[in-house]
Length: 342
Image 1 (cartoon, one colour):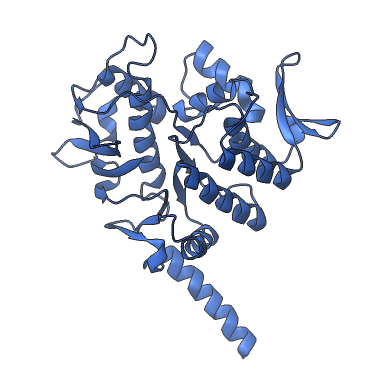
Image 2: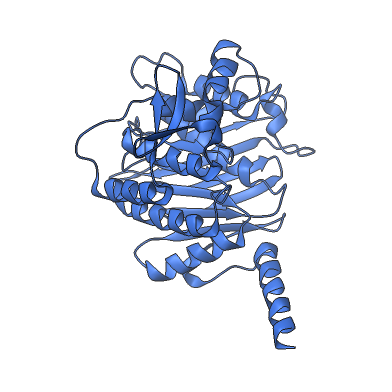
């Protein structure tokens, strides 16, 4: 599990220390505060560690990390990620909790860095588990387009989070006994959407299957496609109990009831060992996780919040932090309540 991180001079993020991370970690803030940037930076770092020394992979960790930064942020030069107008380099330190000790990766690069990072140090043991990033937009209906754009044309457009996800979905379903929490979560996910998605190898397209009826993925509801992605990754065993899942805007395309159920399923999966990092600006997500933190004291749910300057990290079991998103939501509720009372 990721236990802590320290980031300096990453775009709008001047300095951020995330310590005592939980099984579920919610990142909130207004537009332009760096939520998605932070989520992707953590994912890139962990994913590079997973690719390093796996199988016959010949590339060094600096090479893998540099390529991941380039193709995820799609900048002409990696140095463009450094906060503008500061003399110091961008630096990131990430720690993972091992069985007997904490393991750390550190790297930094300046605004003059073109394509390759020079300074990377790591004592992290090789990882056999897979992390994944689930973006706001579903990928099933543009599955082949992503593969053609990135693997055939090698062009910008869909970043590495999209490519990694469609590659993960390529793994065929696996039969046999699964982790208990995975099985129960898959049943809940299937009940939510009333079916499951399958890949038709003949027409080379995903379809949504409800009983004996098959619905083309292009006319399947966005929310169903999004939920199906998580179900598929649990079913094909791409994810295991040491995986870390990064989700940008988990509320995207989902109605409140589905959001509530999905967050409850995340708690169940976290009890099996999975760790979640979520970026959101939804008060509903914040409030639901706050309720779950109270109901499930054995599950640590942390919240990292910002109003655009300093960041604050706290445990949601201790209550909601002060933040403009939370304050505005409460203000509107009180305004409506006053109208009713008047």
